[in-house]
Amino acid sequence: MEALDKKELMNRLFDMYHALLTEKQVLYFELYYKEDYSLQEIAELYQLTRNAVFDHLKKVEEHLMDYEAKLGLWKHREKRLQLIDEIIKTNHLELLETLRKLDE
Image (cartoon, rainbow, N blue to C red; front, side, top):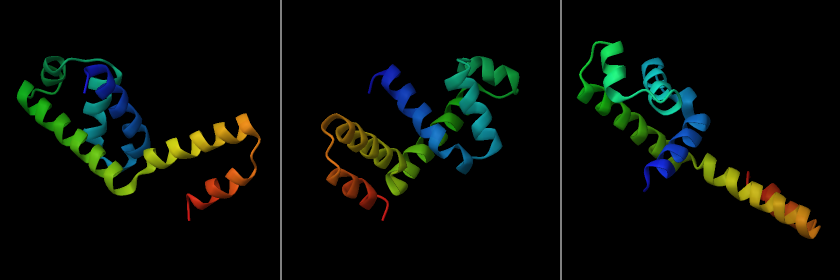
């Protein structure tokens, strides 16, 4: 996975699942992924080693991927958006029933 693709995916998953993370996980994630701090800058800011910050962020990434694997909120959201676009484009109201069934 390219770095940009990974960053985009992590940000999307974070937006969906950040409430399930600890305050420290949210803080490190936001500094690294949203504020574009380097691992070294975060380490210096919180008096940690660069490796400790890396390990912490790796754990956050694993949690986010695990949450999506188990809950599938992002996958379902994408499917709903696809169906809505198709309904709008084709004016097929029977697709609304398919959309409604996604959350059952």
